[in-house]
Image (cartoon, rainbow, N blue to C red; front, side, top):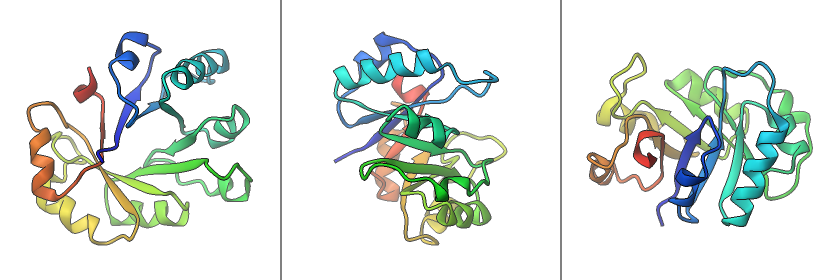
Length: 172
């Protein structure tokens, strides 16, 4: 079963309507100084109606308070405060990493899955297939491919025996 993680930064029902139940929506808006709770609750309600799980990026405390399905910890977030929080049994924490040091940080942060980036997108964090495979072997956590995955290169995930992936461009 393929699990897909779709990063959004605005509420667009047309894009959410195109997703199946195996897609998890992750809301991240790093431009906003304070999170818009009304908007987050609106997205939560819409996702619940569509039976799609909804996670909030970089604000575990708010995700718990608003009773979301989970939270996403970006690679730049090195905080361990959330380890003192209590949350419901089905609440999931996931996070991203670009190198071995960040993988170890995510393991200490107790994430369920680590998003390894960037698989295909040629940016400063570019890994490529070989580095991705090497880093994936260095953790016991489940790994999700992230970065530059599109409809054109989706079949390349089979080369790395990867069924979980995350992105933006693939979904739009």
